[in-house]
Image (cartoon, rainbow, N blue to C red):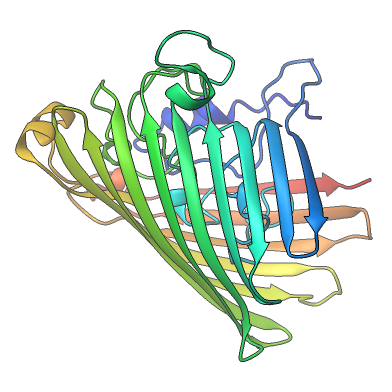
Length: 322
């Protein structure tokens, strides 16, 4: 259940790009709403299944296998750029997923998620409307220190309404440049490929990162390529047990090339420059139930355009757990 009055969506999209976006926000006015409704169960030890009825993103249906110790929007990184952006190539909400253990440390995740499952109109519904299908192969504890995952996402985005009320037809990256959304006012198909890893160097230090590539086709118009990547540092139990320090340095989604017709529709065939995302935070565990997390983000060349001034923003987040 969730209640809040932070207008995170408009805050993100009113900026030069989409890079300013907090990891956890709610804008429900005075109403308490259902944020997530899901049921996960194990018919036997090697298989875990999930059914999702509301508010579920692709990162959630990996059963915690985004391979990033900083990926927790309520308790870790303060921005949405805390995981490979290919997990955000669809406005998914409902569907089903499976996590199959081939060995104790090798597993396969697969999911199908829809957006218009409750719409009976032609071209909508659970299987005929916007969707995202994910497959992932995950390796844990390689040499007892390395986690690794390879991810593939196929998605179709037509004209279903996005959570912010828009009807953008492009790939709904909730971060990155505006051009990276490939908002060409027509349905798009995307195929995204990602690799994520994390090294546990010793008890107090982990280093990881990811790279993601999306090839996007605007129907009957043209193709585009979008990249994102990052390096992360995690400091578990920094200064106090239960606390966490984190650093993220990377490039939010950037349009690196588009065919001429699509580039003409978008206004450019690629983002002109490379902007970087630099984030640092410290989660101080006040006790077992309360965390206080100050954090700061520095964006160079917002919207991947060096003509834009750098942006620095910060927040202090308090998390209560019951």
